Image (cartoon, one colour):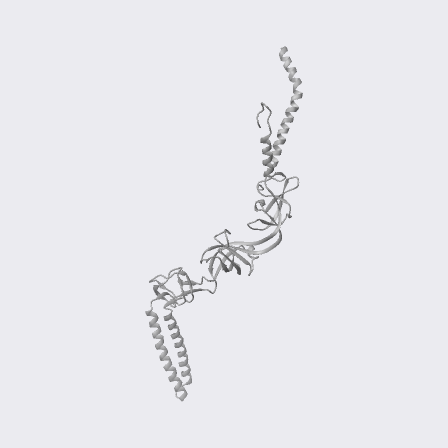
Length: 375
């Protein structure tokens, strides 16, 4: 009993001393945890004031220029007898493309010539009788009208006979061919198309809001494929901006006249167009990594002199390969978090990567007491 009493007395003496030490240790650990939780390792860069080229970007395709493409059809209902070309074939002016059955055209032309000869004789006879006072003047006028109709029919028949073989009216490339050997062809049905590859256009579809900033004459840089990769393959200018929204793409068609090619472009080739909309001399530009999307817009984390990051909503103007133009909410020279901004909390303590590495190396190099465990 006496031994137990002595232990209780000893504990009663030590508790007032040990308890504050234990509480202090716990508080220190909690403080260290809070500090570690509040500190974020990230990269910081100042917002720069620099020249910024505002651009509109879209994917389009190479097409023939208006006025430099020919679409040919049968002159009247007929049948395809021969096909001389294939899609992609290079043709010269006058080269045969498609031949139809000639017999119906030859027969129609001969009939029209005979009718014309008869009308000429009748008109001449009626005129002579009217001049002599034997025949009525109205008969001569009627014969003259019939002669005019017969002449028009003969011209049409000759033209149809000449078109029994479709020939290329321009030098170029066959870009479309729908004629099938032995198949019937209706009048006005386009069977073959020839385009001039020496002058090309590129047609792109822009968002209606973006299209409102695009005007004729603006410079355009063209890249191969569906992105701005590598060196440009061509340059040009905006030739026309449509006034209506395309019902299929829900975009506004913009036609670009290509005037400088580093290599030949092909019809139907996919290209990426970058239209120079405007130049801003002193725009506030930040790295792309600094921008954090929110529910309604974007924000950046501005770092003050004490290294505390403050969330700030900004309005974005446009973006390029080098950065993002911030229209409102940020001034040139202010430091913003770049790499590490996504997922950061407001009022977090920002520690640079170099600073964090130096601190870690310092901890690793701290000597330990003999017999103590390394941290």
